[in-house]
Length: 548
Image (cartoon, rainbow, N blue to C red; front, side, top):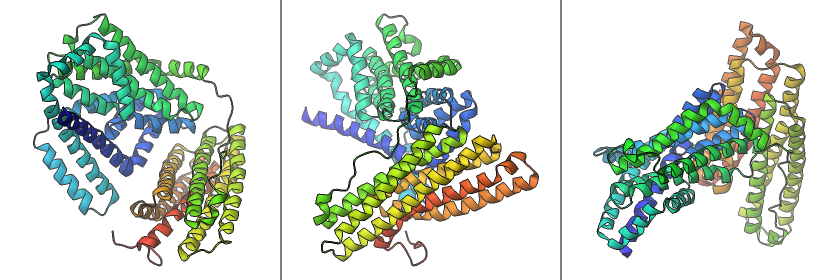
């Protein structure tokens, strides 16, 4: 019995890790492209649903798409109706990817492993390395499913196990709740569906119970994003809550239909596993087709139900600077590092909010950003005083260098906050007061550039937490890439001016200055990578080392 449980648990653990491996690879290699694709689809609901579907298939997670979409909604880049459409498409995409992954690949597994390992170990380019990670993850998903098939085979010979699982066949509500809880616990409805279908294919799980658990996994999958966005802007929560009501409510309705035998599962296929898979796909397809035409009405209802009461400042919270730690320099530096991370997170939120003002001016948001900048200046002053307090104790060279690095990074972060709160707000106010707007091309360029900056800001926060040399190297390399991209965008803007595009002429100064500000913000955050590369020997006197 112990060996059996270990085999089941090991196979399930490998499945969860493999799904995460694929998602991590896609996020690290193609996060900016995914963000840009979703944002560009915001003009058409059908296109938005298709973009959400494709993104979920790449990420193997509708939750990951929900987090991206909620981020866009919080800064006013897309409407609630478009956000609902994207999440409906993402739910369908996660159902499609489950169908694909349940195929028996044969020789594909060793081919994926071979190519993936070669790319990951031998390539010097980050995207190729992450592509290798994705291929390895896909191969391991297939391996884990084969392990599950092997591990669950003895269940059908066990009378006790058959009796326990048979109970679920007569209590669909319990099976539904188990499916929802499992999907929530593992934070992946795709992994949950793969597990349930594999078990029913082996005869280890009764078909009706598996269908109820699959429906429960749909509810649990929608709950993940709902809980993760509880503290987010109300515009983000409206979309995620609407998706939870649609997906969860639809799952409960289909469960009732199953319980009262409203339809015959044989319509979904002759084989039990096929019926379970097709139920999952048919449910999400029907939900998308039926709800998509009413996305606008659903958005209005969510706006009426969840009203925006107030705008909270972002710089509030307890300081990480523990005065009692000053006598222990390593511990004091850890406190300073946590405070720097907190400063970075505040600036990231300020940046997102400021870009939202370019789309729609809001006095409350502008005031909140300025209040956050004041709070951040106070954080910077407190940090400098804290680091100065370390000097009252005997410090070794490492502690001295750490204090200097923290002080320099804090100064850079305050400079970035000043750029956002002072210059970006002024530019956004000018757009609103003069009633002008960017050209279509200019708006898209600034949006794409902002996506790259935001991805780098998040990478910088990761570097500040982990001090990983590989991530630090990418962060510093992206600084030069961003500089080149900014020059190219400035050149394209000048070309539109020569062509006489009226919107470009009216907004020329704002367009160019916004690009410069975003580049400077990126430079401030990129400074987090230099001390780490200096320690690892990856930094030459004037540029990155060419060695990997």
